[in-house]
Length: 92
Image (cartoon, rainbow, N blue to C red; front, side):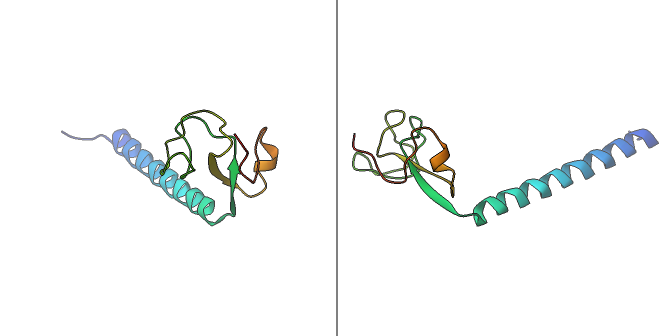
């Protein structure tokens, strides 16, 4: 199969764009890991918690939405801006 000059240009352009997007995504996730994080209690959706509580021992085992002991990591300063968020566990 022979490629004409337009097909070659399309493949080269698509490859370059895909590479650039991969590099950009990698640097964005690296920046996320460097940023300060804090625990935010009471804002977790069912099954989306980050770690253990008094009722279970592992991440992803939250049995109810917005349980006061369940927490997730959020960027520093974000928890106060989330409705129902707290930096300390809430009594259930």
